[in-house]
Length: 115
Length: 113
Image (cartoon, rainbow over all chains, first blue to last red; front, side, top):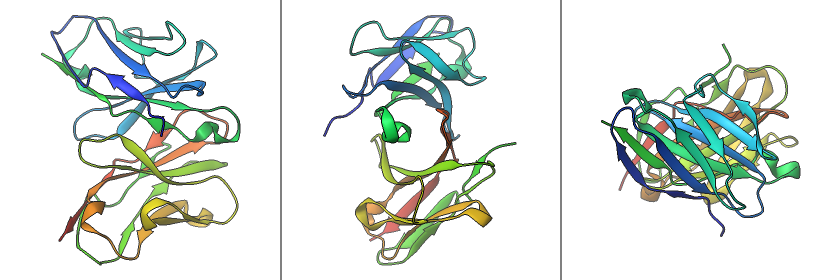
C-alpha cells in the first residue's frame, strides 16, 4: 500500500537555525499538508498546498515557515529560524483529487527538537 | 470558537469490553468527519470517515461510528476491544470544500489483556 514518507524521523537543532523537513507524498496525490503536534497537545493544521501554491494556512504558519515542492516527488517544510516552541512532531499528509480529496493520508512524522 | 472535542483523555478497558469514544464538533454547515488511530510509534491511520448518506459508518478493524447531526456528534464504537486496539484515537473534521482538518485532542485507549 502506498505511504507518505517523512525524513528524518528525528531532527535536533539549535535555536535560531534553519531546518527543512522532508516529505514524499503518495505519488498520484495532488493536495499536500503539514500539521504539527506539540507534546501533549492536539494535532494542529499548518498549511495546505495545491497546484504549486498555498491554498490555506493557519495562524501558526507565519513568516518563519515556508513550503515548497522542489521537484515532482518531494514536499518540504522550512522553518527559517527555529524557536524553542517549534519543538513538536510534524506530520505531512497528502490526498487525491476528486471525491476523495478530503481523505488525507499521513506520514509517520518528524520529531523536531529545538535546543 | 469552532472546535472538535473529545471527552475522554484516557480510557482503560479490559479485553472484550465495549468501547465508545465521544466526539463533538462545533462547526455549522456541512462537514466531513473522520476517526484516525495512531498506534505507538506509527503514523496516523484512517479508521473510518463520514461524508454523507447512512449516518452509521463502518470502518476497519471492527470499528464503527454514528453521526448524529442534531447533537453535532460522531462517536466511535467497537463492541469488543482487543489488546491490539491500544492506541491514540483522534476525531477530525473538515468543513465541506475546505482543506483545514481540525483534530480533537485525542483519546488514549489502553486495553488490558
